[in-house]
Structure formats: structure tokens, C-alpha cells
Image (cartoon, rainbow, N blue to C red; front, side, top):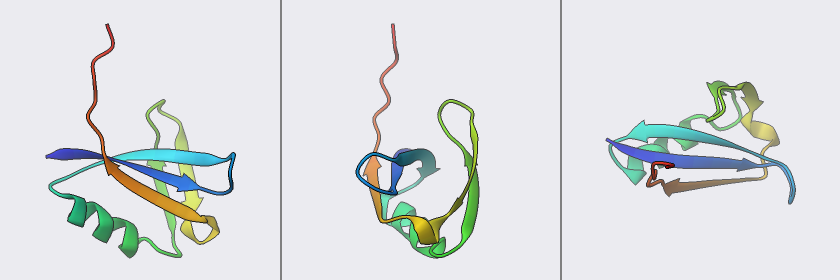
Length: 71
């Protein structure tokens, strides 16, 4: 399973990140497309709960994330 970073941009300064675990980039894209114009909920990497109306998002980026352990 791969980890993907999904970033929801509201404007140039405001965004929320979400990490999803799926088999491929295609599956990640399909997930994001299936959530268009809906309310979604998730916890971010700091454990903060979010409810997000995807209709108010201007740009969504998806990229594979390669987590590095902090020493």
C-alpha cells in the first residue's frame, strides 16, 4: 500500500493536508473525484479532526508521499 498526500487549497495562503493509503495514484484520484461537492471528514497528521466541504476548495493536489523517519 502506498501513501498519498492530498492538499486542499482554499487560496494562496490557506490549505489543509490529508494522507490516504491506497494501492495506486489512480485509486487516489478516483477517491478525490468521488468526493467532489460533498462534505468529507478526516484527521490530519497532527490528529486534528476536519469536516470539509469540497465545493469550497479551489485546487486539489495529489502526490505520492515517501515518509522519512525523524531522528
